[in-house]
Image (cartoon, rainbow, N blue to C red; front, side):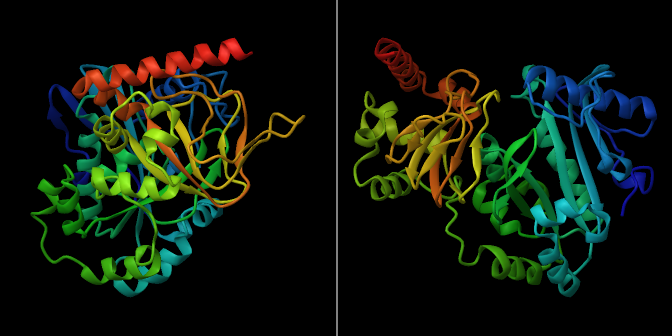
Amino acid sequence: MINNNEKTNSCSTIIAENSIEICVAKTPAEKRAIYHFRYQIYVEEMSKHLVAADHDNKLLYDELDEWAILLYAKVGSEIIATYRINIGTMANFPQKIIEFLALDTFNNGIIEHGSRKIAYATKVMVTPAHRSSPALYLFMAKCYEICCYEQVQFLLGACNFHLLRLYEQLGFRRYYKNFLDPGYGLLVPLAMLIDDVEHLRKLRSPLFRIARKRQSLNIKAIEWFDTAFTGNSSVINSQLTTEEELWSILCNRLHCPPTAGITLLQDLSETEAKKLLHNCGILVKCAPDDIITFQGDVSYTYNILISGKLKSLTVKRPNKEYVTPGQHFGANGLTEQNTHTEDIAATSYTEILALSGIAFQKFYRSHPEIAHKVVKSIINSKKKLARIK
């Protein structure tokens, strides 16, 4: 297990880009500032209901902070982002993390194919004003360098659906079943294979420019991971699927063109719909009892049922179900951030199309005419629903 006060030559260098500095917190004051920053983002901005937070002092921390490398980004003296990395063996991690991330499986594999250390990245957040800045990339570049220095084969993490496209673009892969983290919602486990330079090249990941300089790659670890997790996976990587391939998949799932089966797309041409779905959408599988939306949580996606069945756990009489392919459910988090009014759970193995609000912001800048049609469609749907009520 690495203590963030040790081996500082490997991780305490400062990177500057566009006036952003990436630093390692060492002093109690720096760490407290990070804990307060987390509270501001998760509790005050995102309205997450975190029982474990120190609400009196407005701090957010947990047991992993005691031995983590705590990175933070600043512009001048202002903290604009933070990132936490824990590097250790399976024995260093709490049991719930071992289960959520399938660390026992990793432990069996890495004993045969290299270092026993695993890296786990969490508590990644950026202030709203800097979410289009290089801050996240700078964090990932530094984290990648640390993993290389420590001879770590696997960098693990987890995220909500609206961030999946972003992490897949960086080079992470989905590899295991979703899990519920109270206060943070339904999360998808992710893994980056540090030595899989070819995967980073295919993705055009920004990390490839660092990874391509690596030598003595551990190909056996990559082969083991594919055998253990992804060899027979049906996961559709958002970055490795073309517009036409995604469209074809959705046509097959919906048994009709998405423009006919999804209300949001009805005012778009086929070409426009393909661009929107490919730039903002991601297909996600859920298991029975996965709770996808939580009443009172802010929505960051526009969720569309593709196959399977969902049920509202909030509306009891009568039971409210979502069973129609192409049906929208939950609050609109694509064009604005609304609050969910229902707990909605899968009652069967289910596939959903999640359109990311973060991706849509970028899409709006590059395709304003299409995005404007989408905004207008959502507004009109709200008006129709209001008239019905």
